Image (cartoon, rainbow, N blue to C red; front, side, top):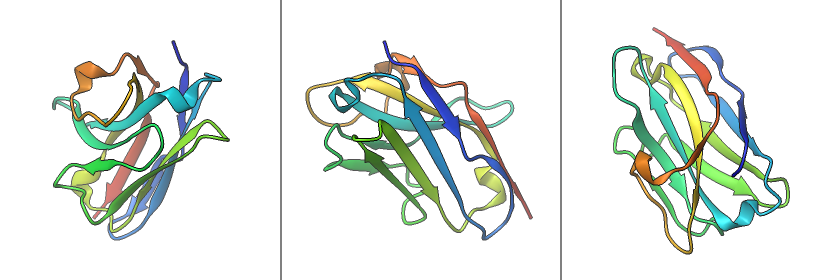
Length: 125
């Protein structure tokens, strides 16, 4: 099991940027693929981005492709989500999640066993 703590959320105007961080407790962080998900009020939790153990493979939801970038630093046990050109519809609680895996990434939230507590992102118009 790995404990995850997100940070970096806040209030930003449309068109602005934020960088989310997710710090993991596990010394075996590099054995986990990681994902970012988000949940807006009254909506299902949805996939945002994922990254493989090595960082060589990434994937994005169509709604954020070209605007968001996921990355990781295995030496610091941290995964990041750089969010640019933010839109009001990006407003949500953002969660990072960890998935024990050998290879690849997953967009399926049920593949992830460990979750952070979430960080609020609010984009004003």
